[in-house]
Amino acid sequence: MKNPPRPRRATMKDVAELAEVSHQTVSRYFRFNGGLKPQTVARIDKAVDELNYRPNLIARSMRTNRTGRVAVLVPPLTFDPARTLRGATTTAHDAGYSVEVLSLEGDARARSERVLQLADSGQVEGILSFMPLDAPLREDVARSTIVTVAAEYDEEFRGIGDLADGTPVALLIERLAEMGHRRFFHVTGDMRFLSARSRKHTYLETIDRLGLESVGVFDGDWSGESGEAAIESISDAMRPTAVIAANDLVAAGIIRGASLRGWSVPGDLSVTGWDNDPMGQFLLPSLTTVDRDLDRLGSRAMTRLLQALRGEEAPPSDDPIFHIVWRDSTAPPRRIDTNSDRSLA
Figure 1 (cartoon, rainbow, N blue to C red):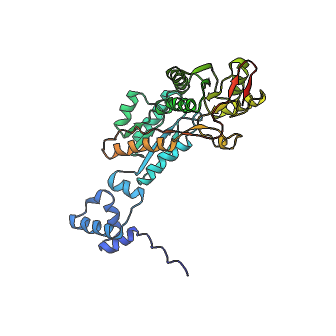
Figure 2 (cartoon, rainbow, N blue to C red):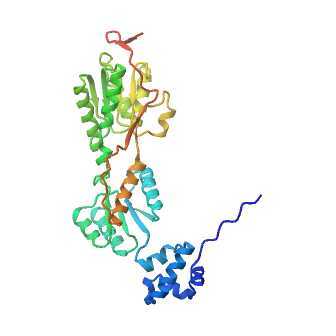
Figure 3 (cartoon, rainbow, N blue to C red):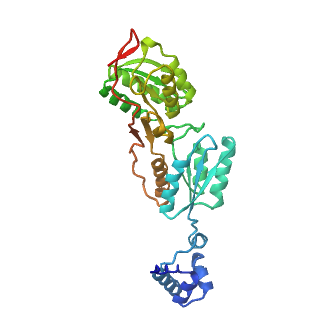
């Protein structure tokens, strides 16, 4: 049995026939009513409603001075925007907007000039920037269009705001302590990043708060090599039972370094990562990690822009964007004989 044909979408010609006016009159209607008589406008209004006619973006712009388009600004290259953009664009599309994504090159002045050109062009109703814009620029842009800045990246496009929240480190340590771990080690990211500094601070504060022992902090650089080097730096007598890594790549280096020293994971050493990289679930053992809900981050930022376009006050958004994915790289510790560096059953 054949499926019934899908109903044809109404056209401007259909509107004209139902309203008993010419096609040109309907076209004028979508150009700020085109000086039409009130009774003519009323007939076209009624036809549009009955046919559930949806003009294209160009027609809507002609009639309402709205383009149905918003722009999203992202940093160049140094920032992987895929998941954040997916959340932002999905939210915009659900609200009936199309999205232009622009990656702006150049120094701050060049980027600012491009943003002003975009705002003055009238091509978009609003701008969502995942790049910092200084206060004078934001004021200039606001004269032409509505702009929302997602305060998640600094001028070097490094994570700040929610992306620099170190709270998950505390949650990792607390859970590992409940398992019985008492000796910890931390391998940081690049300390030029606020996120790396925040995680290190949270690590040290949590160790102190819970009365645990830190056998060291190794300043890494987000690379697997730094994770492997960190494990090589640990003396046999100071071996930890749990390592908190700056990200999943560092954690992979730690697992490799532990294997080269004859330490099993998680038997001798529990390891945690950060970012929930897809490769983590395929490691042996699969990697415990911190997942960042970047889709929600992008959606939340776009929602703020859309609410500003509607003249609505944006409610506070304090839902956490992180959650911990517990996998096989963490387990209760074995008791360690530090004199012989052998685990006791």
